[in-house]
Image 1 (cartoon, rainbow, N blue to C red):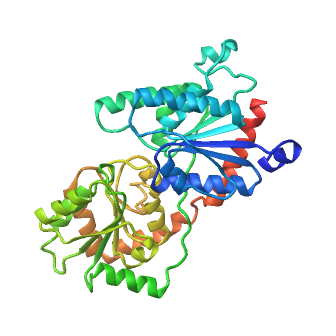
Image 2: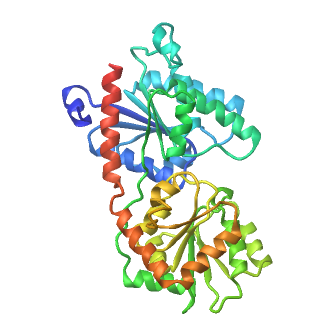
Image 3: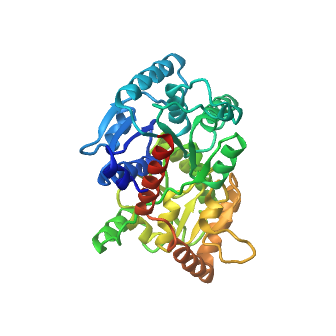
Length: 399
């Protein structure tokens, strides 16, 4: 039964999205699902911090400001769970779809549990209550760095694994982790990149002028300026190829807390690195790039990787998280759509980038493989269609 059929038979399905501070791919993914649910006739509400709500604003969507922060704040977190419990009792959603383990754990705690249903209890699952919404949790990220952060994150993961009706994971390593923690139903749910159109000649000309590389090769990274993205490794690698003739122009598009530190590092290693800040013309930047680099310490299904593959660009990326599966890594076939290197290895990064720049046949093979593999990527419409079917199934099982 589809969500539309369920809506036609009775009252429209009511779906609440809960998430914390979100930027980049996860925020865009939720915005896509929210818009898709609304277009399908569902009644939708979004619970998130005010800055996130501003990113997801849409006509006809009920919004509820909820403080789901990135770090534990015991007193504030208790207040958030109490407020969420009251809101759930009032709004009475059929399905709550939480994005991130903090939002998922808060939703699970707000829903509470009841006695009975011993079989579900033995399996470590929350007992179902007649009025309890179904809970789906999407896990977008791996545990943070640092012992304390990992311990807290582990507790939140276990709450989600034991109490969620369904756990969706953005990469296969996350899915394996949640299964190990005891989640009853786990599926991988790919987060697709939006399909951008071909940039105009004027857009490409402006991007080229902004980069100012002239005839030199352009090495491009597009990422939030945060430790996870490994941009310090790219700048280290750029220092290693500064004596090449012509010297590549290393370009980083994005904003974030490390902007000043990365600029200082580029000066220190005498690397030709341009930090462009946040850009809205990524397709045009891809058009002028000779190599796209994704040096992250962890990624699920990086949107820039998908966009670069659709653009047919040679890619150098770290072999972490969901990246090997995304690029079709198979050392035996020799048909990988990216050169994969170990994380935290600037020497390997420099060697891989210069190999692509020096070998036109290698670059051409990577371009062809990237385009071919990206042709099978799911679209945003595919993601919405799958989500609608999931919500209908969860709501039906709840009733």
